[in-house]
Length: 227
Image 1 (tube, one colour):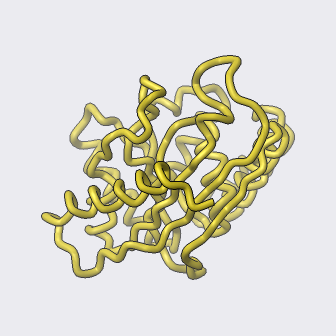
Image 2 (spheres, rainbow, N blue to C red):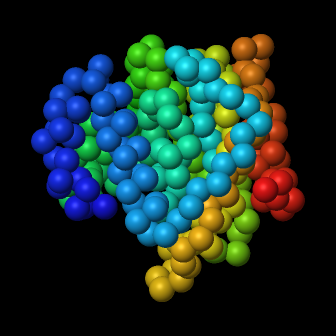
């Protein structure tokens, strides 16, 4: 991870100077994800139920079980998107510098921070980018949990900004590289990109229904794999 960042450090720094230059950073981040995934012996296998349109914004959501989820999400999408993530990750040396300048940070203990997320997301969407949130809010401590409950944030944002939900199911990340040290190993990483869930006609009171619908799609795929 750090070797790649150090090698391309000058270009990475240039790419985060202006918000409009984010697509350059995103291409570098995708290269980083490919370097990491294949370097660790992982082989992504993707099944798509929908073809995303270039220049259109989406809300990407997926189950969250591993540190490799970020790399795999970057690999799956060729169009620029930004992550909404925990403010604490900005403290990681070197990685945190780029994380703070390219992601939408949220402090879950601060109501003002949660409101600021909506404003930041609007700026990114106005630039034509998509947004990615792992709606479980983090990786469950209990690794026996197949899919934790979803939080409302992603669905509030999608409804407020009228962008479709693009659900994805990551099948193998926990098995390949979990938070339990000395576990996992090389192999396939299956990804199911589900059909879009439109939000144009939804109102904010529909966010619970949207959250439940999205979770059921991902849970059903986890329980009954289609690839």
